[in-house]
Length: 198
Image (cartoon, rainbow, N blue to C red; front, side):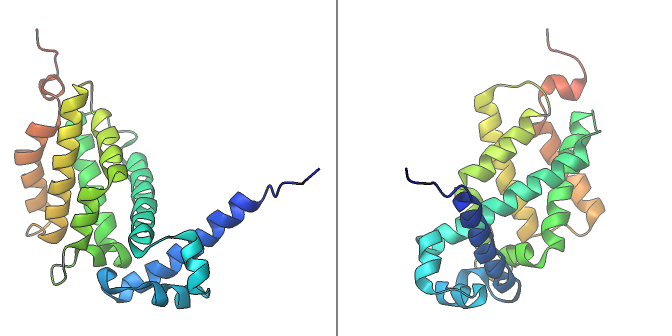
């Protein structure tokens, strides 16, 4: 009877995370769009062949990194808004937390540097994981039409990307933009008025 390696999945995950951690270090000091597989393999202390066993291409590695960080960011946002009942405040706090967290993280901020190609925006726009996480966040604001939530999620990804690439003058300016332009579109009408529409 052949014995299965019950630790194989954990070892695979640990190896993939080690590679992604090495890539993250490189993203901190170099343009993420210019970081190649050779550099990542060297930084991770593995061969190119090993690297390609875990990630079939540079695009796959980038996607894995972006998705890992999106899940981490989602957890940070969930903790930050967990006690907030008002949907408007949940929305603004969630967006502000996203902006602050990305800006304060050198490897994440590097994806949105205005002096480089907008790779972060392109990755966010293509990522079904990011859109699904944003849609789940919007669904937490109150009941709404699922198709509308999906459209709003795509638009909110663009809004956040835009603010990361072209920040407001300061936090107060961004808060005013969110209150004036984002809340009216993102929060379901009955949640904005505090009552259901008859």
